[in-house]
Length: 133
Image (cartoon, rainbow, N blue to C red; front, side, top):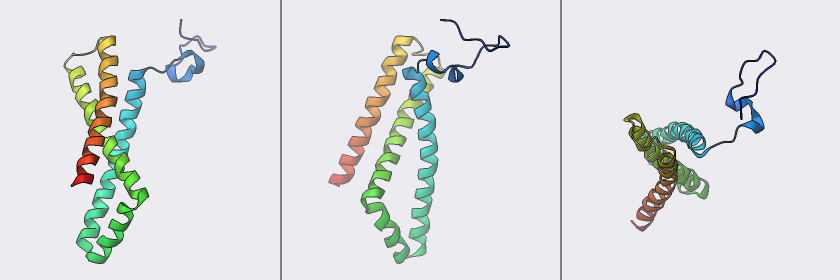
């Protein structure tokens, strides 16, 4: 299938093609990698807030800890930990790509699925360890 042309006969970018462009695993994982990078930045602000609350005294720390231990805080922490594990695993995958390893389509898909599974397993393991401690 050829790339659709604009009236000026210039090719369109894939994201502008709409139904002509089918998202692939590698493109979706790349988008998720970028989103998790932004989530990690936001999570770093949570960590900084925790440190400020810790330095501000017991009352501030208790107030902050109350939010973190609530159900919504636990959901945020779970998401933050999954984002960390996914970003870590996919970053390692990209390091191999940077040295020219695993660029074949079959290997790119296999490592993509491995990143998704590994991030889930690592997140579950970290939470299991934290809950049992």
